Length: 391
Ligand code: BGC
Image 1 (cartoon, protein in one colour):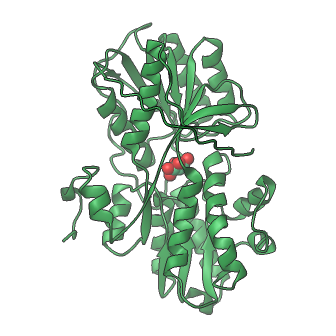
Image 2 (cartoon, helix red, strand yellow):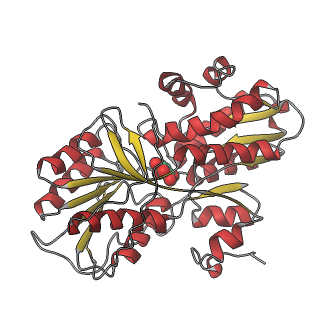
């Protein structure tokens, strides 16, 4: 699938929310995480507030799993933004399963939703779920992850995912001196389009630094085979991701890192560099590296509370801050525009292989110990008392 982003002039719609009721929501089935670093707040109920009956829900929100703190952060931000509109909304979690995801959509359609906001668990399988909504006349907004090869999407709300990968790679480049630095590559789930966008962004920045000898790839023969190519096709990325995918699963990330550590020689376990695709996998890989290498630089993404603590403790080098307040409010703004029959605020467009999907794209911020307090605490995103050792 080809990513095409066309920036247009942002038309900022300031829509007042009046009373959004956050209805009950639940997750069945097993989650996509597990093992390694445990998820925080995992015992939290997925939803809170007024339960709604048939025909009474305006906006349905389907998120992939409660097993990863990232999606609980999004849920919390949805709760914050939907509290003041005149409409009702309900969040459901898919438990890391495509069949549950489709059932959730059917339940929400049965409750009379006019707008569906969906973050797919498995991008390809989600086409069937969004089709159900589309056929029922529901406006479909893809949230964070694109659904490829379907014409059932109306809008896409996302962060600039290529720039997430670029920020991660740039951090590694900025920390590296000399040549021959061991580089370990890890990626997200091949079933998630974002995993390709993140990897594409990272490759853009890393490839010249592999070509000039700054880094030496240690854990992917496919990446080594392709290391002279500045731009990779989807198929080429698939080959690499096939070897280094964590499937967004902490346990798989840990097992993969352990296998890598067993396979390499002592000289590749000195000061090493790791491209970890997100915070959950970063913590799992970092825990493994901590007992195997002399020192490491490792990336992340999402600014999960546990990883912010890891950065404070010197166990993770950086994270990418994706402000879920903006994403949730962008999605809800779109939903409210649709419900009111007003123009929708789209600033970009993504091609999903079948159509150009009008999109709203949010920027990201690279965070390490130097700007952590100003970006994450002073901005009010997290309260300082969630962390120890900040001062
Ligand atoms: C999201 C990341 C998240 C990952 C695993 C991606 O699609 O963009 O923020 O860490 O999925 O859930």
